[in-house]
Length: 156
Figure 1 (cartoon, rainbow, N blue to C red):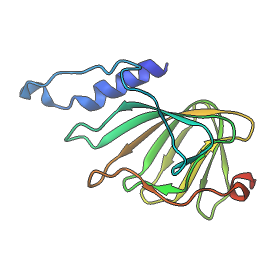
Figure 2: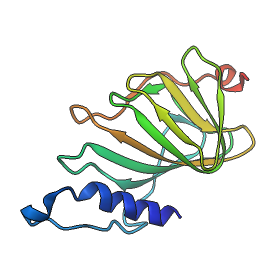
Figure 3: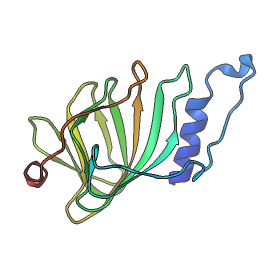
């Protein structure tokens, strides 16, 4: 299912009405881009990012497959043009600043409005994988903020 989504997204967003301009559909094969670690400044715990596609002008959309091991999560962050998460497997949480944490499970679709401070990740006992889709404004698609504290993470 993940491969099919990557191919569909790549084909859908890489090719615009460019048939009249001599451009053609491209296929980004699964695994053609190396996985990267989430890193400790933007994430807590073990997180792997598998890039799916980068924006290709005039499109500003990019996407990645993000896998969170149990207990792993993002730091607080915002997206200048919002973000959509497609929960592919497992169980996780998302929280908007000043609001209660919400549970997410496989097949959920999460829409995060532009500029909303939030975090997302796995539960303490179950991993979670999602496809993250976001557009860039002035070549920037995320603004990373402070880490989510263990106390914030554990709150119901």
